[in-house]
Image (cartoon, rainbow, N blue to C red):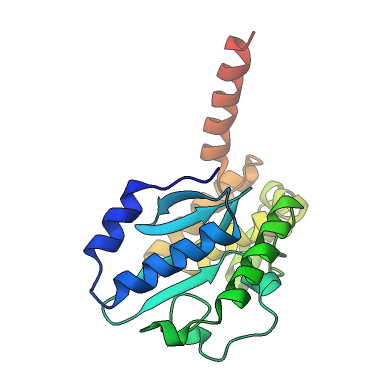
Length: 213
């Protein structure tokens, strides 16, 4: 059995006159398509859940929006108007802007099946950051400090990048020189750029392990 959240009643009531019938209709269609849907509010907008987030709707000053959480897997093709609003059906200003009820329910059923099957959206591939070339003054300083050089060369690319970004983003010569000196000191001691935070994290983990049964 589905649920009705009174906060959504209040949301609809406070919406512009043109939006109220649209939101009321969308709400009823979602419940018809998914009788077990659970209503809630997220980010100050009405959301509908069924084994996870199903879809959502919102009202703005001049239009409404409606969209599916897994739209790329639910909708058959991309709506050219989708980019005009926060949802996936463009700027909805009247019932005419909505797909037929049968189509909407079909989308809802498809979204339900995806959630029931635990299907997750594929995350876009992360673009690796371009490596930062060590400036000549940093390379020269490392060559004069064997311990620092050994530590730096043993670090993974992410740790090297942290030091290089910190040093090369210095806005003035004095700041850069100070950071370079600190970096050499830490590297000669075998420390990563964020060694202080790693130490704090290690201490917290240690305390938790001591109190755990």
